[in-house]
Image 1 (cartoon, helix red, strand yellow):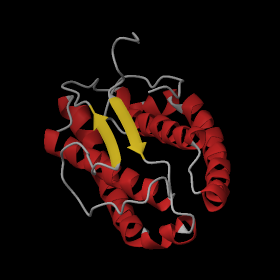
Image 2: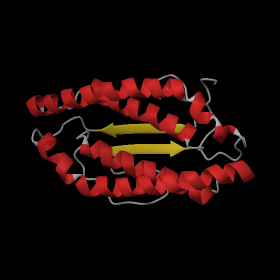
Image 3: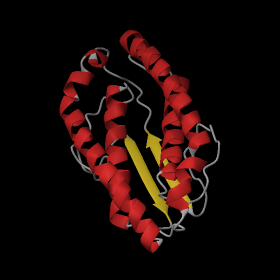
Length: 198
């Protein structure tokens, strides 16, 4: 893929690195209502993805309302997870808007997926197989993310600052995983790059 053409799945995150020291001890607890909603939306996403399988097989398209609803579930999940992992301390809104994210001045999250006007009819039947190498990378990224979360936890407790390098890695790992999920979940036919770069 040409470097001048951005991948159809984009994720940006900007927030103040200062986190109140006690936040990592309780913020996951404050995030529970959002995590419950995100879990319910994940179940909805699975149903919509199953419907998408058949719409792509028969029409070579995902209906725009279904696509937008799936993207909304990813946006909500990212807001909930980034807060639960104390990457920022602004409480996220219970927002189910289809539009692009902009959570405020202090925290800016932007998760965008470009709507595909046309999808290859038979790719849904074998995309999961083509993505196997990415699953291996995602497994290692998950291990790295757990270590990063632990390191970030102690860094915030001791310094009141979230290390920029760790936070960047967590955002990049989530973006990578999201791109793999979008590819396997029929949201794009563009094969994900083996890269953590935006």
